[in-house]
Image 1 (tube, rainbow over the protein chains, first blue to last red):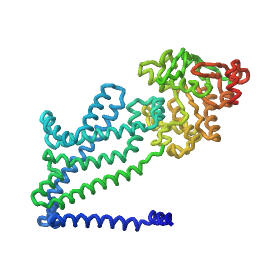
Image 2: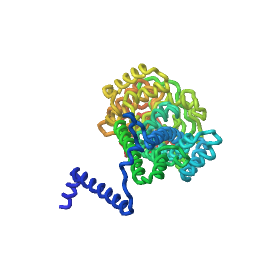
Image 3: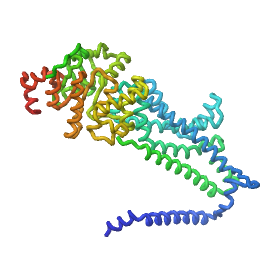
Image 4: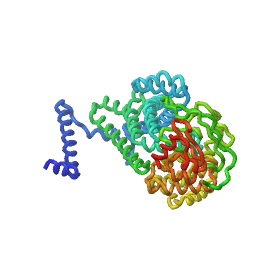
Length: 266
Length: 250
């Protein structure tokens, strides 16, 4: 009997979906009730104008969408840098050179054991003036260095996980270390580490909100401003949370598709 | 056994020693010389150093002392020499080690194009010729995981042959195969031997050793216990240890 209920629940998607809806609606109701108990007056109708406006039928992006554009710019630039820094660091850690391993080690220990916020400040107030970078470049670099440290560990685990026989086979065929990495090891490693690399991209999208502390006008910065001007705190922050969610879920789905397509069975 | 002509010495191994980091002695004062077109079979209990010897021959393992020279090139610290030796010595592994993300054809053309700098068309023609030789040309566009173990091993042999090596080494090439697939791989190996390829073979297939080899070396604890022609070795072994081993394995 118990078993059959379990079987029913397992197979019946309708049951799953309704349970999910009940949970979601229940959660939303609780939230609204909680806010109302505190005397919060919901004004969702005031939100759209911060997203977009129509002037003579012409679409004009509101501050939040403008911020989104900056967020996206920060994200894709940092993402490319993150993956490059991560790969280079991983290769340095795996190299025979003591110096390369040492540099990689110090970089990893420092970046992983200090808060990102501090690193962003450090990059902006200490490094940027020396290298003559603007705040946007400083933000991108700080994010990339931080996420790159984590990405390098992902790369490293992926590279180490490739069967030792693959190294030996390409060695005996006369391939150089560089050719071996390019044609044999990395193509296999990267297919395997796509899921954790995607999580890293998702973290990056979320962490990009932290560069608002050095006054880069990305989505969170605009949200902060609007919220302090209008007191629409919950509405604004729920809205940008939904946008972040939409971004990250889209990314995960796209990568999941490619992962399935290029799966390698060894 | 065979009536083919053996050439001059192509592999010279002079009293090499190898001790692993964990203190296990793999090879001890091991010397041997191998002629062109000679088929040398190494047999012995597991852990006797057979595979380590093969892996030292192409530099997969470092030797502690002694010297190895292949076709006049010393296997030393010089990277150029090492690369030259890696190109000239083909190796077939127990677990095939095909590249799983590449098609069979690409597995065979990759090193030809990267290392031998052959144009794509030429590399593919060579690959198809070799696939035909190992009787598996219909699988050129398959991926390794779509092939049986025996088929994979034949592809691995084709891959090594595509580099036109002067020496082929087989490290227990049939040990991971189902019994009914061992034959098809041994056939390919026999054909190679007949064509005059210099071969160093670690195997437990005594039938192969008896039929194909020119020289048999029996090893234990990193040392030669006994060596000789297949005839001598299987019919009239001198050492008690050899007799015991053969009585257990035959």
